[in-house]
Image 1 (cartoon, helix red, strand yellow):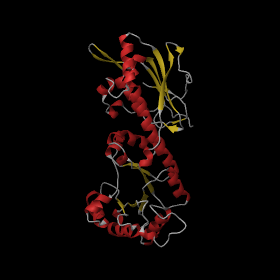
Image 2 (image 1 turned 90 degrees about the vertical axis):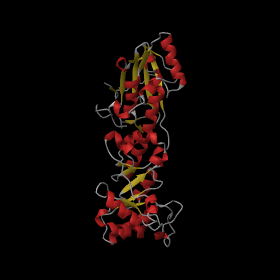
Image 3 (image 1 turned 180 degrees about the vertical axis):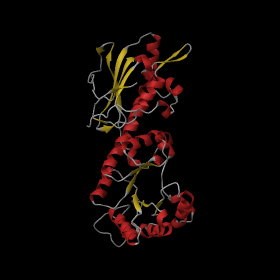
Image 4 (image 1 turned 135 degrees about the vertical axis):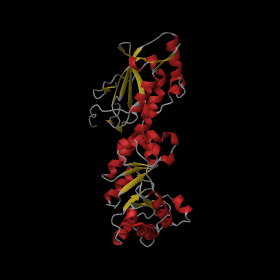
Length: 365
């Protein structure tokens, strides 16, 4: 794996808008960690531990700034006069967002009084697991696409509450665009998109009418990309839209269902899989647009794309300008584990685990 990038700015904890009070009281925490904290405090036991965090895959690390924010804002204990912050009494070392990590490589250590942060393990591990999953998946498709932009389109495939952090993870991993303002909020961006099927239906199934209306209202503020598969005739519809919009059209998007064969391919089936968006269909659309003088119109493809499928399109030289990728970016797992490996100055890890120092870790201010 590549070496860690030199110390750089981390996201301000305020960016995450954490439900600080709820996290402090253990609302999102596995009950046994809450009980452990309560017991340690009740018995006045304050072990000085080293907590070590790792995962088991070749991955791209995400969620580390969010995990640190949890520690900064929620470590401590409830006192007679309110919450007593505890982060300043801890020593935290961590890698950075976007660092490549190896299996079992330590990505963060927390040293100090365990009773100050025992209630946070569930939350910070969850941050790491989710964001690393997304970041690793996005990096994989970015690498498969080479220099062609990836549009991050999985918002509709998961709960809305995960959008902000997932969008940030995608951004760090190299996605060029996200589809909601929430996904873009941590770096101050905006969501991007296309003229959708539902709007076309609202205009009676007339793609050109919907695209023209959309462009007149929003064309000065966004790149206009139009879905052209509404009638399952992508070549004809792409030409009609390009002729109608002219220079106002940035691109067309192919999103044919994998249960359909586009009309342009009805007489060409034979030695390739004809259903859905496929390289032959992309070539047909590209050739038609070029022949009609619309060489500048880009082609975006979507619908079931992952790194493997993008790699196949690239190997065949399909004239794709950008890939829209959705649910595949949320699949898989990147579970993290936290272990106490030292306590009160001596090694104290469970059997099968041990202290694994990592010179790549940097101190957290």
